[in-house]
Image (tube, rainbow, N blue to C red; front, top):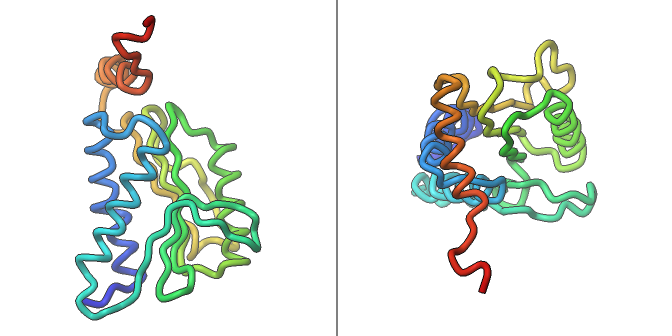
Length: 179
């Protein structure tokens, strides 16, 4: 099956969101590095499963973009050209200012790398849906905000109980720490 940008977009906006949310809820993602590893694995597997036609897709984790002097979190290459760029954030609460800064970085990447799409995927406990409202201007058909927010589906009490266990796993202290 041939993988096109619309197929990839549908994957990001559906199965990828669901899988990341499930892993976050099960404490398999406790940092941005975990989010990056999980997203890389899911996207790489998506392209491996659909590679019956021999299309050349490669998913790179933190590649250095010499022209921009930055390291995007994930870049999907089709053959040897950047095809999609993903910036990932894991926070308690993502601010509009932070989302705006990432949007600007992705627009800059568009001008230099020329990928087909860019995604800001953020996982947060608190917040309500998308942060960047209004017209997207020059990034309207290129940039997509992908919020995965627990407060959208859970009550504050449920999130508080979940956070207690999350803190244990995200700041784990070994039993023999004093030795």
